[in-house]
Image (tube, rainbow, N blue to C red; front, side):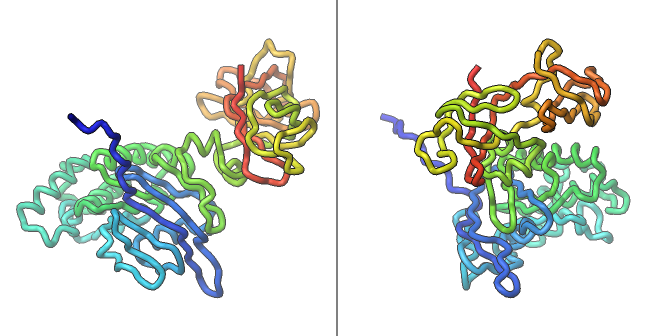
Length: 376
């Protein structure tokens, strides 16, 4: 009789537990960081400058030692306090910000650089496979200076993938490219990594780039990982106020808790469950508690038939839509995402209505947020 028990989940290809890294006089760059990346997944670390995201990448690679915790790659502990495997023994591939291609070597020779221990036949077959994977077979005998920036990036990726690393690390890999090329190459890199089954960690300051490429995104703040989650969850269910403020666009508006399931804001009422206590530590939210609600631009809908109106004070044209900044009667401003054929003038009053599927509330003491799922 076949075994019908479910298979246990595969161990993560990268596991970081309680990581601590300090510089100088006790300055903590990574502080109690925990992270797990599943086999075949692409992870991305975002955060403001100086938050520790590049340091994290260098720690994983083995270029910086750790002061606490441990790092496990493909089941092998590669770093702990007082012990560490050197970078070349960690099974890691690296793609640098400046590509670091050898200018005196052709494309195929650059890709073959990490395969020096393979015999000539195996090396040639692997190089051909990598050229085909990144779509550069026709450019195999060109030199880096004869390639575009996007092509050079793909050569760097192919060179890093050629030895079949357990984990690929990429540090701001598209920062030297223009916006349009970054978007296109980001999609290509995701397809290449998925086709090769390679797990990867990417560092970037571009949220849209992270969302387009990654299966899991981590938001770092002053050395701490605020949230490690799917892009959808980061946007709609941020775990902390910092994540809510850092990811995407939005405004915080005051709200009054009417009862355990209803809150009231200036634009109307939201009904749902509030799992966390409000001010005063009450176990069940009582009437009159005050919180703040995060509203995204797509939570406000332009509706000419709505009796609720607001004044257009700013607008940003983005091709397919506008992002309007609207002033309510109270003077408070909110954002609205409006199709571009609704081209209203600054100072014009337009009808709006609340259409929030995911609303997040924050107690006034800034504790973790409570998601409210709107009931229609």
